[in-house]
Length: 277
Image (cartoon, rainbow, N blue to C red):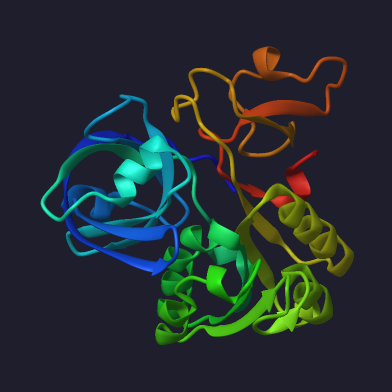
């Protein structure tokens, strides 16, 4: 896919609703009409909590429709706990939309989405758009246990077939979500995935074995979110259309074939076959 230049804006958003679909996980609805209109599937925002540390945190945009966007927040530290507990009516600043999202057209007519844990938050928007385009869509969703599964019903409501895997076998397939992909991947024309790096590496290997195009949304902690600090790089094929425009700076030492690409700027979504992990 080609890297797309975006024009991120600071949005003053107001919390319109909140819910807790699983312990420690909150979905925060925000009134942000301009952001909702501009966000493409797979893009993210940098969020500044209204109090405490004034350090932004990255979140994939979970929902974007009408005047509302939502973020899925996992409460693991002071900033995320503050965001997860924000009451309705609270205001906060968002910078976005940021990054390059999914390029859905090349994935074909039968698309499988592969989600690991909170990677589910980056796949609802592409699922909705694919269904609206008349594609057949299935979600393979993996989590540690049944209590960690979040919003699988939201995908089913949009016409997505959902198959679940849990590490402890408390729901669905007992084992890794990539077991399901390996067993059934040949039935699909394209893959879109988001989750922890070990899962994404496995998805990339399976896609290569089956000769199926795959796009991976990489999870990373961003310091700036706009490509300025070069703290979130990944090795990428120099011939990729997402390669940085200044390869003499981004070139991997001693290798003319690869360059360093910023996950927050050139990504977070990359073609699996162009990554050099």
